[in-house]
Image (tube, rainbow, N blue to C red; front, side, top):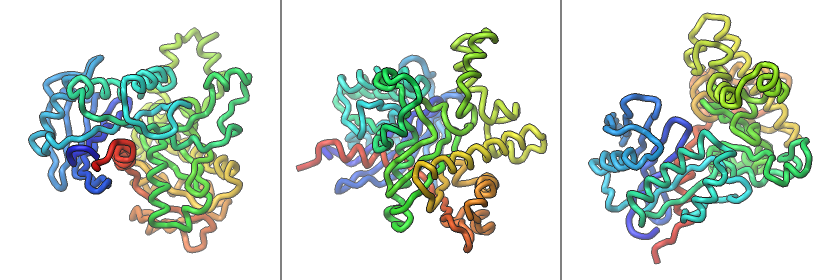
Length: 395
């Protein structure tokens, strides 16, 4: 890469931005720090981790339509800990690439406009990434920026899998299944190839279970299906999102119930899922500790729907060799993994209780017909690696 050895990644969610700091040498990216800005907190706080050291710094500005000041303050804080004069590029996670982007790209004004044109397909996430891209472009117009797309990993899915049973003209207009969490699935596929190659060569279902959650069917490391389809609402229940929903429910809400489109959108994205069913919390950690029946029901529904989606993924794959749990819930909550696995016992799946309790890498039982693994994901590493792959290299 040209000039310098510091690379930043911005992983924009709907309400947070995760920042990765990487040292680049010989076209390799090594993480040296990470940060987080949570836009739900007041005042805005930048949390930075560098090795064993952590710090929290309040930002003097607030998030608005533009994030110029937020990014400027963040760069100022980082300059006290890293040599920002060596910053060579920033890589961004962009949730939706539509059919335009099937791999990472360096960003110029034309590509930024193309990404902006896809905002209607990801109204919660796309604007945040664009605000960050625009802020960096304003503050450091000469700094190289790249985009990595969550949808790109799923470009290997067949047209049949991506199609809804709607009029063909709508499919041709882009109303189809795209799939999301692709950066996470790309990382898991690469980890399997590196460390468990016999598993990577088979039929694998990866369960990315976090605040946002989905499942992906991998065949020899390539995406064949994903529980999320046209939007990030689809698939399994999530922290605040509903997952798969009979479209008749939406018609009923907008018709006889008289809900506005904005009200229905807010409910489906922010007031459904675990928080909607329980009425208590969107966090499975809270629900697991809560003795109330509503909390138990939310957990039970989540686990049942995840297990059901594993079955559907296995149908697409024509079999199932292994399951991988990843992301916050998947990596750290043995009770959830055990409950999902219990629903899949009919497949001959068993887990080792001790290994599961320790969050070990391999947690399948000795007699299990299905391999079960726990593998931490790292979306920022994928963003950094992809940034290096598309930017000019030193001669």
